[in-house]
Amino acid sequence: MMLRALPRAAAGIAASLALQQTCQQSEDRLARWRKRWLGDTRGWELGKTVHPRLAEFEERLLPDKSARVLVPLAGQSHDVAHLAWRGHNVVAVEGVPAALDAFKATYGADEARRIAGHACDDYDGPDVASALATMHIVKIPAPEGGSKRLTWHAGDFLGNFSSPLVDAAFDRGGLVAVAPDDRETYAAVLKRLVRPGGRVLFVSVEHPPFEGGKLGPPHSIERAEVDRLFSADFDIEQLKREDRMPLEPSWRERGCDYFFETTYLLTRKETPVCDAAGRLMSLS
Image (cartoon, rainbow, N blue to C red; front, side):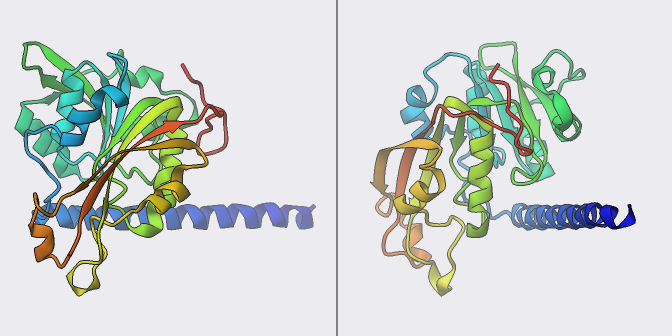
């Protein structure tokens, strides 16, 4: 009996060590972004302006008037407020706690007193505890009066983040911000969370190494890499490719002789969607 138990014990120890390593990797990632945030090197923030590509392609991303929309690595993006004001059920994910404080201060937002009755009712199964542990329900004043609510997760998008399936996602500084070694994990999270037929508006950039050989962020992601990461699970359509050097000469100051912004629409293929443990997820 003891001999039979040894493999199970070894597997348990291995699983525990893997979990510890994953938690440490997650904390290291968040520590880097907190440092960057505190250092006020947030050139990706556009203030109270809707991202131009979201404004241009919003109808392609969101043909329905009310959808659950994921905004990974949200920062204090105005796009979160914009999508909520448009009537969408926004799920923002950001690992820097100060970002939520800044967002609330900028938009006069506050946290709802009661979670019940909002998006968390859709959370069920073994992931509910971790989901609720990082969840904030934020009430934001609407320009036309009244208020809108959105769900904000203060945690690591690449870690144990959990959410009901989403209809759409807007990535305008997420995948290009993470380390290249984390791209496959990032793509796997999108694959897990976007429902069949759901869409992702992904804004990528293409550039040579920056001065001193630094690769990013933002990191260059060309079409071949987009295909490698997403083509098995998403149909890929290039919507626009724009030379940003005439509009943003600061890239030349960082050592670039070209800098393109490329926008893709990724549509989730009609295949079953499973959670991180391989369980089939509900599409409701």
